[in-house]
Length: 122
Image 1: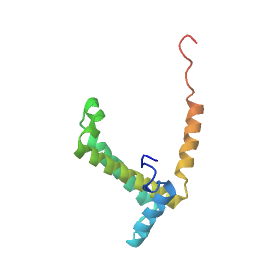
Image 2: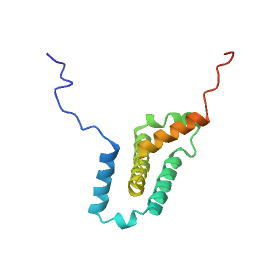
Image 3: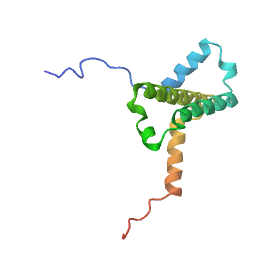
Image 4: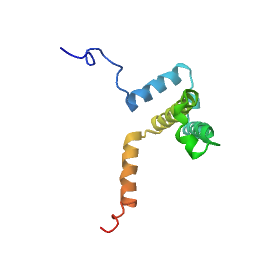
């Protein structure tokens, strides 16, 4: 006897490569590839990041911490985060960058550059 949680198939797990392929198919179906140059994708990424910043522009720190409490503002934030990620993944695809490997390498470098400070009195 089971509780039913594992009996039904859920949505397929998402992965970066699958999302990049889906974005590529979306752009190809609309003949957008000629416009998806590294320069254009970087510019679009910047615009979308600015649209995300705009949501928080005049909020107090307290208001910004609660932005996801309101369904309308939460939806806007999620849409802009999705736009930023979509353009970043497309830029990585065009340039042949493995986004997760690049992030892991950057974290490694930051851990070396910024070691954990010793505990006070330790």
